[in-house]
Every structure is written in structure tokens, then in C-alpha cells.
Amino acid sequence: MTITQVRLTMAQAVARFLTRQMTVIDGEKLPIFGGVFAIFGHGNVAGLGEALHGVRAEITTYRAQNEQGMANAAVAFAKASFRRRFMACTTSIGPGAMNMVTSAAMAHANRLPVLLLPGDVFANRLPDPVLQQVEDFGDGTVSATDCFKPVSRYFDRITRPEQIVPALRRAMQVLTDPAECGPVTLALCQDVQAEAFDYPQSFFDERVWTPRRARPDEDELAPAVSALKAAKRPIVIAGGGVLYSQATDALKTFAETHGIPVAETHGGKSSLAHSHPLNMGAVGVTGSSASNALAAEADLVLAVGTRLADFTTGSWALFQGEGVRLVGLNVQAFDAGKHEALPLVADARVGIEALRAALGSYRTDAAWTDKAKAGKAEWMAASEAAIAPTNAVLPSDAEVIGAIHRARNGPDTVLVCAAGGLPGELHKLWQAEAPGGYHMEYGFSTMGYEIAGGLGVKLARPDADVVVMVGDGSYMMLNSEIYSAVMIGAKLTIVLLDNGGYACINRLQMATGGANFNNMLTDAHHVDLPKIDFAAHASAMGAVTRKVASIAELERALAETKSETRPVLIAIDTDHLATTEAGGHWWDVAVPEVSAREQVLEARRGYEKARTAQRLG
Image (cartoon, rainbow, N blue to C red; front, side):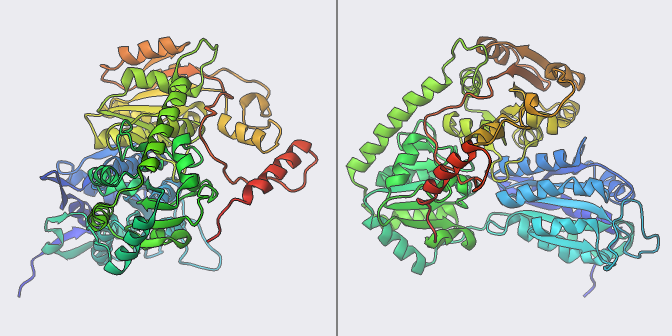
């Protein structure tokens, strides 16, 4: 049998392969790669740069301003696409590659797919050491790209052109596997990128990738069903896996059929419409009083598609019900069995449907459901009070959230945020009605994600009204992708809350007995403290900007700029101490045992008392 071959450089083979990978969403066949972000350098411009130019009519290459920013945007694209589509990113060797390591760790923590293609050293080693090459005195195989190994689901270094064939096939398996899903790094030696090889034509055949939906094992399903039937006070904790599995309708039907209240993690928020009477809202450290009261009393917790991180479990001190059991419904066995949970390894949608069928007519006690609904009513009153405008000189974050909610929260709105104090307020207070309407990067809590993340969301959902909330600290860390958004006409509305520093950590510092030190700008070592004009800064990059002085002005600016086609930034000064006191739960942050400050010692005593509630399993 004659095998048809095509002679290409390794880089050209990569580029052509990317264009041939497809998926089907709502009956429409689409390229699974939404594009390639690239910053070229000597380690990739001659190889992959030339190759991407050759396929520019088939896949778009986006020029970014910062390697971490572009990789953040790529990760956000995958999250906004519910992991059905993703992007690739390419850099040169050295600092360009290293700038993507944080993004790789973020994608790894959040179980999100992204293909990272950093350039690497010469495989032939003839010109060693090349510009930007690190050298290990005792190991000639070490490269800077080794840093990607612990934060990649799959890593490979391509030192011969034919190696790209099994490497790309393995990459696609990982990127599309619901259980293994995460970042893939293929480090491309720069000389090998330019080497030619006779590749089999079949390697470039079109391939359609669809989600694998694992069914539960009967030996795991039966005990999970028995535990649920025996429960008097069950709750569901919905994680991001509900969204990625497109299980939102199944969750709604399950909750309604069995009368079980639902609480949401950061990743799972918007799994159930906020207005649904059985949606108790956020759970855990940044949870609502409704969710946390039920979680503390529950005798069974059905954790669906969540990795049960400490913010969800209140550092494993939240679940205090007598004899409480966990059932872990998760596509990844590692997550399903955490803390002695009854594991139910399955796709979230298939697993929920299997549980509902097996439970039959089971319905939890009406008193428990009624208690949940009453708790939600109380929480909603507290929530509405928190977001209501006041006459304060400096508004709270909650008041800003209220203004955005009134002016812009619609069925097509996607609220994007990441680190600092805003995630806690948004988790409690943002009212998301449609799946994906709440886009929070809190698995890795990456400062600087917000604006780049908003760009990625807009690329994934071009018809969405993307609203980014960002603090001054995160803005200062990474704002360059405003210019990228301007370049490609991606409309974002960025609301910048200027509270004069790292206010969230300042409050944590105070809560653990520490002195105000090095978080707020005024408390940091300084000679001068110039007032930053964030509106002018964003305007210089081409954004439409406003500086507002009140909640009323903010609402007007949000309404007036909704029809703008360019990125918009609206800056407002806020109170760095004001937070929503309702809801919430203890979080394990270690306090020093010994200190010269009495405030620290007092905080330590409170810390030791709180730790007695933690589970160990």
C-alpha cells in the first residue's frame, strides 16, 4: 500500500494540523482551535511564524502585547467556551516562554485546555549557548521550558521533526479529555521547527472531536443512591463541571424533582439561574448565609463537578451536620473521592440523570426545602441592602456591583473578574441568570487575569456584553491587552475600582493581627505617591474612558457607553475597608504562634479555636 506523503517543516506540520481539528457545537461544525496568540522572537519567528503566515486564511493569528496576557486570554476563551474550544499560544525561548508559566499553572488548577508552543534551544546544540538559553552546570538537557513540566497535563520537547506526530495526537487527547483536561506544552526546538520531514497525508485529515460522556459504574451508583435516599437534609454543591458538561438543565430538573437546594462554587456559579427558588447562591468562605446555613446542617452533600477547594469547604470546617456524608460526582476520580466521599466517577450530566432515574419518587422532607427557601429570602434582603446606593463619599465594592447590575446585567452579559476582594463580593452578590454569565478565575486567583480574560471571553462569545471588573492593583499588574482589544475591535467594558492598593490583603492583614504594612500605597515605603489617572492611561491605548465620582455617575456612564464599539474603561474611587458583612465563613490562614503584637496573639487564639471545626479525612 502506498502512503501519500507531504514534505513540510515541523512548524508547517504543526500549523496545518491545527487547522484540521474540528468540533461540533449545537449541530454546527467549527474549528476546535479559535486562533493562535503569538509574540514572535528568534526562537519561533523563522519557524512557526512562517508556518502560521502560510495558514493565515484558515486560522487567525493574534498579535499580543504580553505573553502572560495572551495566555490568560486563551485560557479565558476555553472557559467561556465551556472547554469545547480552545486556543494555542506561541513564544520565543527564554523570558517570552517563562511569561506563560503562570498562565499554565492557572489553567492546570482550573482544569482548562490551552496549547502552549514555546520555542526552545537548538536540538543539535551546535550554537550553544544561544541567546536566552539557561545552562545547568551538571545537566546538559536542562532548558528553561522544563518549568512547564509541573504545570502541564502533558509536556513534550520536540527534538526531531517526526516526533510532532505522536506529540500532537497526544496533545489533542489531553485537551479534549474531560478528566485529563488541562494545559499542554510542546516545547519546539528552534532548529527542528525549520527541519523538513515527509509527513503522512493522513496526519492532516480532518478530525472531529466531541466530548466523552463517561457513565457511572453500577457499583458506585448504588451506594450513592442509597445515601441520597437515606438523607433528610441533602444539598447539592454545583461546580464548574456542571457548566463544562452542559448539565445545567439536568441539574435544574434534578433539584426540582427531589426538592434539593443547590449551592454554587465560584466555578459553578450560573449553573442554575439565580432567580430559581432552589438556588441558594454562593457557598463557602465567600458564600451566602442561605447556602452556608444549609451546608453546616446538611447530612449529605452531593458535590457535582467541583474539586472542593478550601474556599468552597470553608477550609473543611463548613460541614458540621451529624453523620454528614459526601457523594463526589466527578469525571475525575482524583476529585470524586476527596475526604472519604462516596465516589461517583461520571460525566456530570450523565451522572445527574442516572441519579434522578434511580431515585425515582424520592423527595426530601418539605420542611428542609421550605427552610432553604426561607433562608434565601432572608439572604436576598441582605444582598439587596448591600448593593443599594448610599450617599457615602467613597462607595463600596458592593455598591459598584449594584450599579453594574442595574445598568448592564442582561441575558447576554458576562461578568469577568479574578483576584482580590471583588471575587468575594461578586460570588455573594452578582445575580447570574444564564450559564456562563459569571466568569471568575478563582481556582488560581490570578491577579492581572481580568482584562486579558475579558478579551478571551469576547473572542469566544463575540455577541456577549462583556463587563470586566478590576481593582487598581490587578490593573497595574497587567493592562496591556486593552491595546490588543482595541487592535481587533473587541468591545469590553472595564470598570476599574481604585481603592489605593491591595485592599483585600490589607484587610486580611488586619484580621490576622498584623499592622497595616506594604499593602495600601500609603502604608508602603515611598518618597512620593502620585495619583494615577487610570482613565488617561487607558485612553492612551485607544480606549473610550470616563472617570466618575459617584454611583449615579457610574450608572449613567455604563448606559451611555453600552453602544460603543471600542473598549471602554470607567474608573471610580472606592472605599478600601467596606465589605459585605452578611454571609461568609472562616478561612484557614495561619496566624503566628509568637509575636510582639498582642493583636496577633489574640488572632492566634481565635484561629486555634476555629481550627477545631476542621474535618480530617
